[in-house]
Image (cartoon, rainbow, N blue to C red; front, side):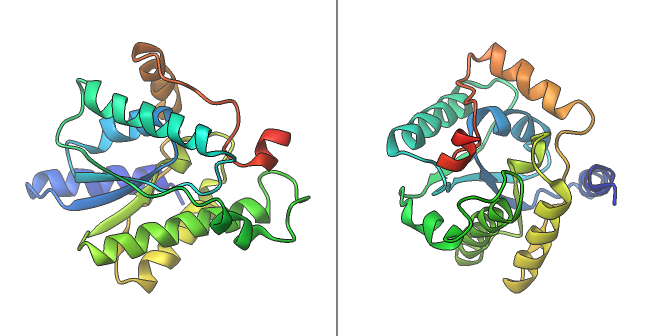
Length: 200
């Protein structure tokens, strides 16, 4: 499936209808969020959810939070974006990946991590009456967009929500995220977040 084409078609439809539905956007970091927010904020009423218990230390967690706050505050091409930051609890990640510590990066351990974060996003969205959920994760060329969308659709359906299909790296989305990162001098980490991605 061409996820980006599906998203472009939905955005065109919503703009024609002059609709601006609510979207809870799970974000992993400021660089990955940059293009996604620029691209989506004209069509959706966005709240960014920072929930990433996979991050290997509280210091790294807070560093990414600070950069996301700064980007949202300073970026001239987005407006009206809210941010919710959940508390850091690394044990939530370790509980779901127990026994998968030696699995190669990009495999089933990562899929478990995607689901953990998307499920929490869906729970929050349900509690706070959001229409759509999605994640910035598909902007990375190192992430499996098929799997992320598959998990996202499944979790959204369980909670009675709509999942915004995406492949944000397409249409030069990843390239634009690099440009925005340079423009705003964003901290770009060299690993996904967990100690295993750092190791690999």
